Image (cartoon, rainbow, N blue to C red):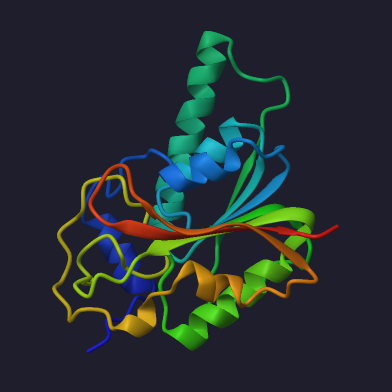
Length: 231
């Protein structure tokens, strides 16, 4: 039986623990975004905000969206604590980057076309047709010259809903919370870098990275796609 990842599931999950993830950004995001010129960024499935906070602290104007209102409130508190610490030490910028935390169902919501210099989806896993449609909407949100970054788990044939591969948001460097057991995800929930690249028209996109890459903090590899929208 395929697990249902609706808002009550995620709100219950986050409410059951003070913290689900580590608060650190996903390593593939750091690797791929560090050399980019900061601009506007969209963080899909932002969870407790590790990626969004990292992006904002590196000069990005971030829109962070998530299905869980509990996660968004926690992420905003994390961000505000960081701003307070900067003010106390005098290290804050006069015009600090901002994060806009937005409650959205990414399967129903379409971001504004061409609005973002970076669109990042980290460990979103849905059935093939749903995932392909989502990638299409995310790609449409990338501005000319901007970057689309999609990262997902490789299919090892043993992922479960109670590990770090669950759908919608899976910022994977923290301790895993106790979650209900569920049947393993089928292969339709996973994707390859070549599959993702094939969704982007060559006339509109330059594929810069498409590979399986080891994760530095756990076993297994991740599918990584980074593409640049042609100006």
